[in-house]
Image 1 (cartoon, rainbow, N blue to C red):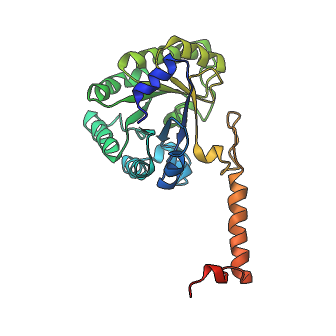
Image 2: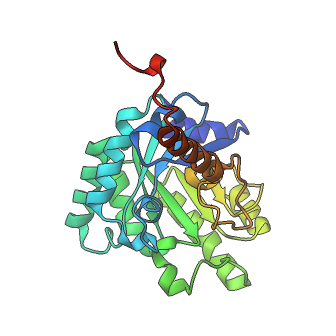
Image 3: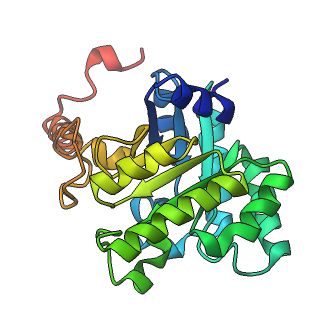
Length: 263
C-alpha cells in the first residue's frame, strides 16, 4: 500500500511523485492498474462531475459520496480527499465531523487549502491521527477573493508569504503540499526549502511531483486549455465518435448482429 511515509521517502531519495484526480469507481479501477502514486478526490468534482462553475459548491456529502465510490475501485494507491469549502471555518466540531466522514468513506488523508490562517485546524487534524496535505498558491476555494484563476506569488511580498506559509504548514505536520499556479522559480525555491514533497500544478518542472485533473489530461474538456495542461488523449473526439458510430449502427440495423444476439 502506498502511504504518506512513502511520499516523504520518495523525496529523500530524489524520486518523482505522480498524482491524479479521480471521482468515480470505473476510473479508480483503471488507475489501480497503473504506477500512479496517489489519487486526489478533489473538490473540483463539483465542476467536472456536477457542472458547477467553481469548487465552492462541493459539500461534505458530495465529497464523501465520491470518496466511497473511488475507494471501492482503488487498489494499492494513496487516496487523498479535499476538505470542501468552509469545512474548516464552521467550528472545530464541524471540521472533525467532515474529516471523520471522509476517512470512513475510504480516504487515507485529507487536503486543506490555506496557510498561516489554517494552522490550528491542521495541527488538530494531525494530532487526531489523520494525515494532512496542504495547498498553497492559487487556492480555488478562494477564487472569488483572489479575483479569478490567476497566477499567484508574482510580487516579492506575495512570494514571501507563500514561502512562509509552506514552512509553517510543514511545522504544523502536513506530509505534503500542492502548489498551484505560481512562477516556476518560486516553486523551485519552496521545494528546495522544505523536506516535505511538493506537488505542482501550473508550478513548473522543479517540484517533487505533478498533479492533473484526469478529465483534463484525457482531453475530455476541449474548452479548457490552460498553459500548464498537457493532453495525453483526445478523449472528447474519441468518445463522441464512438457514440456517433453506435447511433449509426442502431439506425442502420447493423447492431446487434446475429453474433450479438441470443438463440
